[in-house]
Length: 112
Image 1: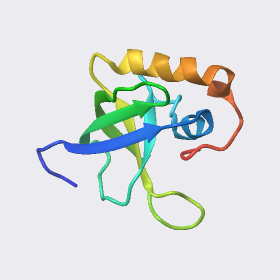
Image 2 (image 1 turned 180 degrees about the vertical axis):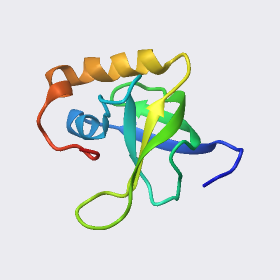
Image 3 (image 1 turned 90 degrees about the horizontal axis):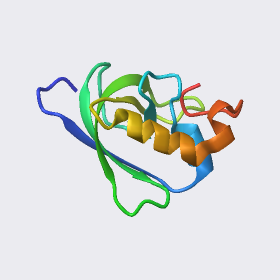
């Protein structure tokens, strides 16, 4: 996807296990993996509508594609997006608060 428009992607996480699998703690500012079969390129800008467990509202987050997993094998196809903009730090902290000790877990994630 190489257009000047930002694509809108949506992700709602409903439990800690799914959040741990999606969270990309190794990305500066934080990021999440979004399962999708849509085609994106590294560096593409997206607008993420992010729902986090018990929060009643979705967070609108500008983001940039920093990871691509193609369909095949045992992998879930999708993109990893890095949070950008002024809310990036707040969203990362909210995720880390929900995860507690799972942030540095050795459990398999959707990206590593």
